[in-house]
Length: 571
Image (tube, rainbow, N blue to C red):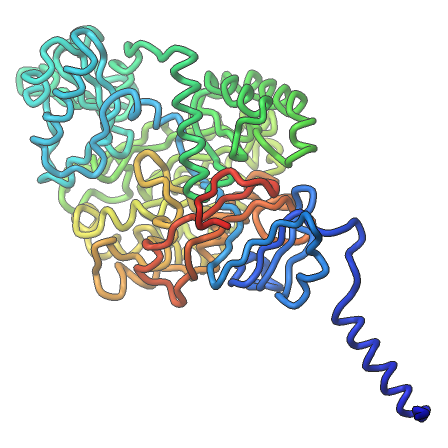
């Protein structure tokens, strides 16, 4: 039978449509890995959710629909069938202190424990394990969980008569020491308060054992350092734990002395995270930090070419004030529950502005810890003053925590190009504990004001502030989108107008931190050409977000197309 010309044309059109729908093998050959069959949250505004992705040579080479995946699969291609599970970009913690875990592993961990008798039992047990003379460190105690009163030497001394003890509180801004530690450090009734700190005292002038802000350093500087081997092993454990939680990157903040350890891990291919390092330090060390930045870029150039950005000394970290829990956060008006207190500036404005200016001169953006609304305003003023004095760095400055924001200051983040860096879990731990007590109803509405900052045009960055809060990013994303205690309540969320959407929260934990480090062209979203950093979750993401986010687990974590963590179900 002869086919008519119109019939042949129809067949040709049908064949062309079929060929277009089923193209041949891609240029460059099949993918190394294909992931398909679930909701892949890309953080790409043009295609926010897709069904499949493909990876070759460590990069995404395809992001799209399920029906297009066949052409990417060859004999050696690994295929992960999601069966409805979700995929998200590799998570980047925008504010973490990885070195904080060193003291917890070395000492005692009191995180989340409300029973003060349990504190002393654990401390006594650790003293018995370590033996007389050994320093006991760690802590992360939270006095707001147990009546709100600070502990004292009277609680520590009976259980640690032969061990010096100095334990950080949950915020890392208050230290609790026993009498032996105070004696070894030479802290007594005659010791003056250091700049930016307070020694709490009895009526006699003797220290109570509580050291606020910089006063903690009077004792902490006497703690013997870990050996290099001990430090490296604890860091290795910390990195692996982060990968298990879906982290592929962190903005960690620590002293310059830890930089060589990170370089060693990165150069040896043993760093399962992309680390953007914020160095604590006074402005007179700006040149030293700039040299460390340049050396790291040179030494790790080959590593970066093979797997993307790995480690960089990227910014400087300064501290403006304290914390709400200890009433050391600097407020524009007095504390609602202590009208004679309004906190204090750890770094006065003139010094803050001068330090920002100096770091800008060597090309460093600056992150400023500012919790109270006075400290937030002073930090914005310091950035504005520095911009008037000299050149601004290529990357944006940022303010960390911002637990109280005055409405007049919200638009200034966009106007000055300053990033708003928040720690969502801190919000839900303070609900019904001290947030409203400290601030009163009016100011509490502007506490953890993520929504207001967003509405004012600020760019959001989210992070955990571990070890003062859980490192688990899913708990942070839950807090940001639901604003309820993990145990439930308040109904509808605490000041629900300040919640953000799942897409906004995920962006603030992926592309936002990537952009802050200048790496957003390479990581931070699931897009063709970027390094294949992604996370396979154990189930679908609830829409709208609810408490079931806390039930999700990480089945596998991938960095540049290679697994850094994988469970049996992560296949």
